[in-house]
Image 1: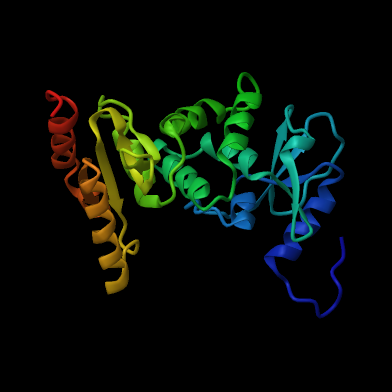
Image 2: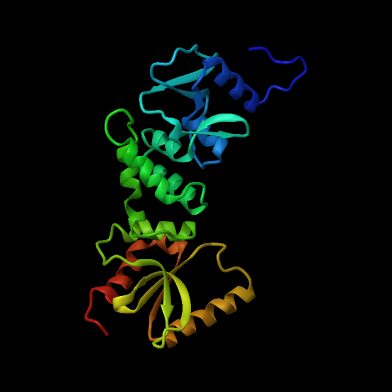
Length: 259
């Protein structure tokens, strides 16, 4: 490959040149795909990473790390800013074999909350690639277990979802609509246990900034309580620094006799 004289040497340009040099079917993958996709992966990226379908004839590119996959299909390919790259779902599968469980959970939750990848697509991809040939599917499937309860809308809620799934408590309903006895909408809440008429609201650091939002939240909780629901409010800091205290509060509501 040749570079036009005077052209700037950019990561994008090097990535495109490397894919072209590797031949048809080459796609950016793993840490390089994560960088292009804006995934929050804390991996040192010393070389471009490129995946090729098994059986293709190709040349290696200088400075690139090549992977060969027998299960790289059209469903795993996309194009971003003119660069061939694995889909977000396939990228997460590939990274799952390299990341620890906590790091994988963090990256996965961030991607789902930011809607970088639809949860059903991610689940379907992990299922399609499971078995021999793709090492990350088992880890990714395990990381997806808490999401079987449903989808959430913030990183704080995702952190709560993971904790709740490990505590052995009755499963909550995420993003539940509380309604009055006559069926009128009262509020959408983070988590609810309808049979116990219990709500758990998880506040992130920036979720309820400003006096107007503060007042609106208090009015909202007053309406929920007026509809005969109990409300437990916790912060992301509480979940991270003292999860046992949060668990104890929920156990009193969920494991004791109904009110």
